[in-house]
Image (tube, rainbow, N blue to C red; front, side, top):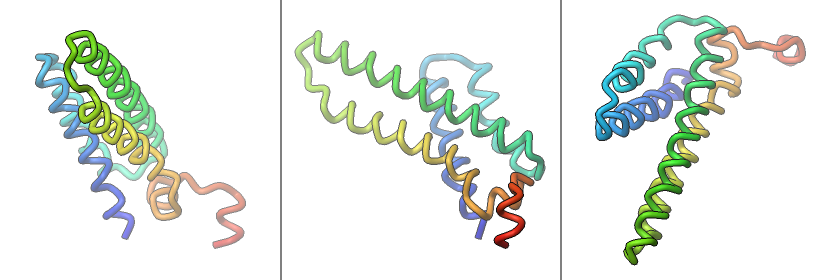
Length: 120
């Protein structure tokens, strides 16, 4: 079941790769496409690194949303739909980072706390 929790994480990285591809940042595209391969290593540093990367990705999405909505408003164009879509992508990416705090992924990546070991 914990493998299913990895799907939104991989989707988040693919969405970030597409975002950077659109702006021509090829190094970031490569990083975003390679990052999900790290999920194969069941190490604590992988989970924490993924969380940091996804948090930074969510910040990037939020800033992009603010920029696009601002430009569209300046031009007198509707901005609600793009704001809603990018807001959803921001929350989805943040949610993907939080998946590492679920019981299954904490166990998979060695993130168990003392209280977790006692309660099973």
